[in-house]
Image (tube, rainbow, N blue to C red; front, top):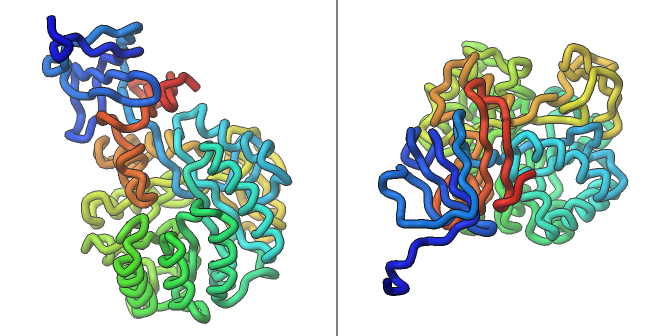
Length: 403
């Protein structure tokens, strides 16, 4: 037998029903060797191969999940942790539940604190522990600040953006900006030049202001040819002026942009932040691959009810709902991304493939990492989530290694 005809030697052969790029494939085969997927598709079309280990899975085989917006978990918080070791606790909490790529989110703070936390997260990025960094603030609306500390909210500061991006060393992927904030256009331009995606939200602005910010962001991203050509909306509806028929506000403008394929909107489909019907409407109205599921998780994810911190503010978690101890505003999520995915499918009625893509392929594309993560396809990192029939995690692989 010639070398060209020799069977493909792999470490692991996964058999079962898989959500692949072409959709749900019963009788699928995913071949893993080292850190990479060597082949994925219907088993009858697979190349000749020899596997060191074969695993038949009765549930679903999904790509590892990608969370674009996560503040913490396992009792640890990215905005509050003094060092990378404690931050790693939050990363591993979500990784064990299938989030194999995580964007660590900070909250509004003073400039010195932001510099320190970004530096810590940049080290974790260099070590391959996180996919990127997201800054939620400080250029946000005080009226729609949610659980953000009002003492440190400021108008736009493009110089601070450039400084934090330099400290991040290429790890800064997204930053939330209220479209109506002072110097928002300059902030948007600075983010695009730094290789980051403007994420529009925490806004009390008008429909016109959101539309302008979307157009400005698209133009800036087109010029710089960065991670993604599309801006995002930070947790659509949450932290935004409510819709009124005589004052539509920013949310409808963002959803309208998503319907035209001009924006990717985040949805926290955890049953707390959005009604299931709202989630269904968002998926129905947005263009294909223009919705991303996120957790907005804070330290209480995976933990018991009790008292926690988010930045400088106290948070009370009761019945797994996190709210500010003073004021009662929702203060992030307590779910893992697989829980959000399950709720979107089983409670909101979102089609399985669309929901899986919104928790894997679409966020990978926002990060500019679609050739590396976000799908079960040849050449991608071998990030795999095995779930049961109820979409609950059974086994997680990251880079071919069981978590």
